[in-house]
Length: 515
Image 1 (tube, rainbow, N blue to C red):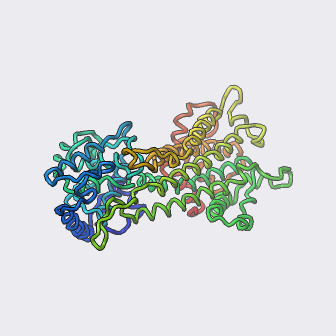
Image 2: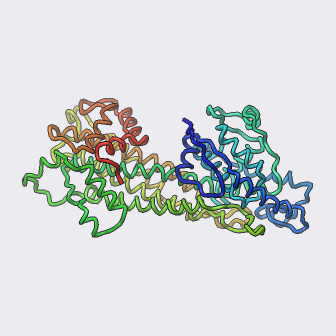
Image 3: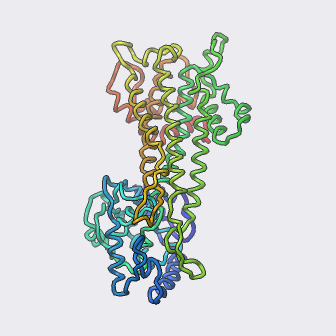
């Protein structure tokens, strides 16, 4: 579905929502007049260097460990073609369209800053590809995250040359030359410096970071919803979420999560039903009582990662770069460490939020800890298994998330004859974070599905308005408690409710915006 609002791409930083709109929703882009002017000015400086006798890296020399060779002007067009063809060496499964479009947009933005020396006509082809919905086929393996995402970006640059394989707007694969011709896009022959400028950036890993931050912002609010549902279903208390208790440990994420849970549980008839003095429990289990501490720490991690992403969105990453005073200088800004670290950090937070959610689910299924609920929430325990195996699925995902939480950014491996002897592995960190975000979505969906069934089993006591609204939204596609049914479709319905934000929308319709 295309977003009708055109995103302007100039020297200024792009906003997070602009990246998401172009990458995920197909919004069109437009290079600004300022961008064209900046590119034209810097291109003049590159052409001066190309005509000079002094070797200039990336302009009149080879690349990487081959940078010591001065390239004759007659061979420079071949140099650019060869660079892109040889570096388009990815392998494995195809990266998702939204990842490749994010990468294309972010590279276009760097070109638009005027610090790369690319001709405006070359940037225009990238702009046209985005607007035509033509997406280069980029493979999962190939990037070491330094010098940037070389292999993935090279597959994009290959398309600009009219070579390689693409997906058209309908999702069909086709030779790039045919797709460009059909769309009326003229490929370009890359000039001096342009090949390097098109591939020397952190755009792939940054695109994955921005998309993950967008998704996690919604998922962490949903985690507060599912935690509140579990607290209610397990006859827990909301007194531990009181603002005066949270203020004793003033982490902003924790305060937000606790406030959300208080709002979601406000007015719960289920919780009121055991506040008659008959309850002998002194305190709830950690998975209930400490929910804001864990989800809050994840929120603060997201905030830190967003700050890093914001700085990266304001960056112009290439090597060499054209400075405002006309100098062309080599640098190391293409190293992906800042992005790689936070991608790894987010995967750790995701695994822990999922882990505590799984523990709450397990409590609702165990008669020794569920405070009166039937075993596994089954209609007729023994004849029926209820949600027994749904928790198995959840546990399997959590185990996978723990493996995905192992950092990629500590695993440097040397390349290019030891010229590139320390790399970030940021692309790999981004790939595993995408899988982790999907896993968290599914874990929260199973908690939501289970808690909704448990809440229904507490009737005639009524849930809070916030949690009740989520149960009602689920019941539009999933029936309430009863004999065993084919469970996988019900899990997928809950996954959709979490993934598309419908669960969050339902809760907020009852209690107002969540923090």
